[in-house]
Image 1 (tube, rainbow, N blue to C red):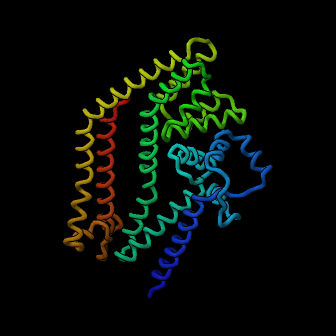
Image 2 (image 1 turned 180 degrees about the vertical axis):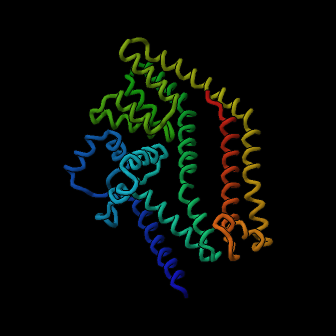
Image 3 (image 1 turned 90 degrees about the vertical axis):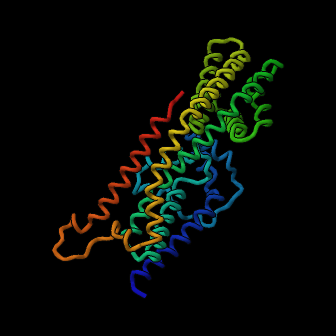
Length: 336
């Protein structure tokens, strides 16, 4: 066994251990000094809300490792803050440092497996590089699905609040009643809003925190209507009833647009995936023939460009395919 293979095996075992630890950390909350925790939560209402939702009854295996502090040295604090907000929007119970550690473990493990199977360093680096960015579309899709589910539940939730207001309840009492009878994610989010207000956070601030967790234009309309009524006055029940009707109309229009643009999106997906599928089939039939695209030429006297012409052309082709799919998708993505 060569030294390279031994190094790959060591990296694989390390990635597996890191991934197992990160998975365990996803079900754990670090135990720190109570005064320090309250001090930190008081500075960050969003962190306070998330702490309330996750609870503190779970214990980690390792309490001394701070992934966020370690990775912040390489990625910067702004990146970690944005990643934390994105994980919150996706409702993923992981801290930014833990998520980056899991990504790193996945990249190393992918590279090791591809190299051991194909014995090709360039292919391992290429697929490992793809794994570095594969979380971006996954998080966007998960966030979009969660926001869409929230919006679909919002109109009925407002109707429940309207009925409570007309029966003599206050807005927060109506939210309490409606959140108990509503499924997640809308029930969970409004219960979190109530917990924040019970801790002394103003309702407008709690709404802003919810808007960070659920970036929806419909929720922004609800928040604006509530703020205007709170400052100017008026019948809140009628306002919420009109907002619910408007949200229903927006959902209906979005549904019509989705039906009309489905064919274009499907065509873009098929055209974009066809070259990858064809390359996979040809590789299974004749691997040596296709391997010239990602293997450097070894003939003497070749320049650097000629030597790596295959990988260069493959990279250009993949980039153009992804660019075409992106353009088609943006054309069909019509906002209401």
